[in-house]
Length: 394
Image (tube, rainbow, N blue to C red; front, side):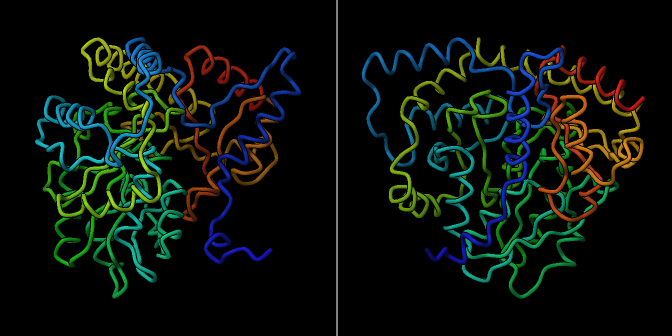
């Protein structure tokens, strides 16, 4: 069977390959004194809060399970619009919001609508691997630009200008970012966007961790800049609905019918039950619960990162959002007699039964030195993981 060149270009998602290995080992050690601790996947240990669960059950019970419009329930689009106003003080009309089958569908739709064969999209290195594959699946090319800790592992306007070429179509940024948990300063984001606009390009902004900021400097949406920024968002992270596969995108008004036409053909509509459930995300009791959980994520970060530092797992930049720790494992790997984050991750998995993600997925800019820890697990699990790492690393 001949496989398409498009499919051949897509590399394995090594985060999930490591996760499969960790799950297999977890089954083998399930009854041991040290069952596996998973600090490798960016999935909140919290699930949808009570009102959301009740809304889903009610939708099923009442038979509200049939197709919606391809752009999603109008009521949900209006709720999201209201959230932008109340939380961020930004006016985002419901008509510019398109509900999608997760942020992944939103990124695919954006790339299919805006990227032609041969177009180049500038992205930071390191960055979330699937984002570059969405560009590749649209026959474009993701151009990874090395970043440093001094740049908070984010692009700058100067870097964008330096790397802009005749085939450049725009930028795909993420704030807060996976794997680093760092955000772009609002002033720098504005400079980047204005530069991109001056070149006739597009600014795609992955904001799926919006709402999970721990520093007021960075807790803003790029939609505050102007109506031409395209924002991708999700109910998975702040709203704790990972498996519900529901997201949204905010696009310029003129792009809505284009996205709608693509969505009609590719997805028909997002999950109807998930949409009815998500309406309850914006109830005051739900928002209060999400804010309590955000404070818990911050408490985990504040406890866990000094512990890593003490173990020789250095974090060049303190994450200001999301729930990740991007740690240089060079010193710790040397103590275990291995080199690089891939071997370090498997050594830790095998010997301490702690699953972490090696940097291999996230680019080429020194990513072989780094591992990503997820602090989306409980404080008790984080404490046990640190105890095991201390025992292993001495």
